[in-house]
Amino acid sequence: MTGAVVDHEPRPVSVVSEVGERLWVLVVAGISTGVVVAGVGSRLAMLVLRLTSPDRVRGMTSDDGFEIGRFTLGGTYNLLLLGAAVGVIGAAAYRAVAPWLLGPNWFRRCTVAAASGVVVGSMLVHDDGIDFHALKPLWLAVGLFVALPAVFGAAIAAVVDRLAKRGLPAGQRRWISPVLLVVAFPPVIPLVAITALGLAAWVPAQRAVASSGGVPPFAGFVIRSGWAGVALLGLVALVRDVQALT
Image (tube, rainbow, N blue to C red; front, top):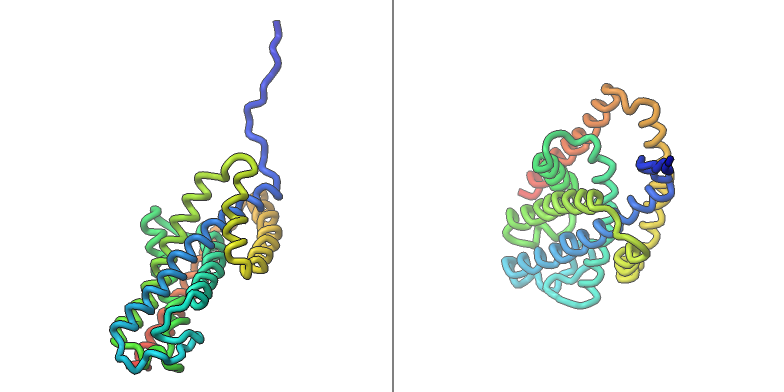
């Protein structure tokens, strides 16, 4: 008696499915991590600096348009919204750089944290404006706004890796989390749409490179050098800003 032949080989994932899976990871990891670390973290950092700075800074308008020393639901939501947007961008940036990172997970995350700290820190710390002239002590203000993106970099790497490894939940409930997160922060919808379009172009290109033998070693070296160069430029800019402030 001849039985039916069962094909146990996994079916290849379609481009649409892979784009959907990657978008799910970026939205869930990005918004949730961004809101908690960048959004809530920024609020806590501002609270600490309000307590350590002179009373005269209260009521002043920060360089980002927030009134120092004033807590409002609208202002807090705007910070969380900013964190959600930063989270999606950070998750996408991490997925782009992750294939070129070297070493074990702990070293890779330390690398991402250090690069995030100096690159984003150099954007946040600046000599013009009033923030880093009015907020005291200076070392604490600079330290907090370098540490915050560093913590975000380590967190987004860990969360993205965890969600990508675990995979999507089964059935239609897989979309509950991303839909709820986007509904909670609707201004990120255009950013999510742009991310989806980027993935729709990136995934087929990545598959084409893989099918042709992968990225040549020299090209990989150039790409890694480029990422390292961005981090080095961020460090140089951060040092210059701190020197100008002191």
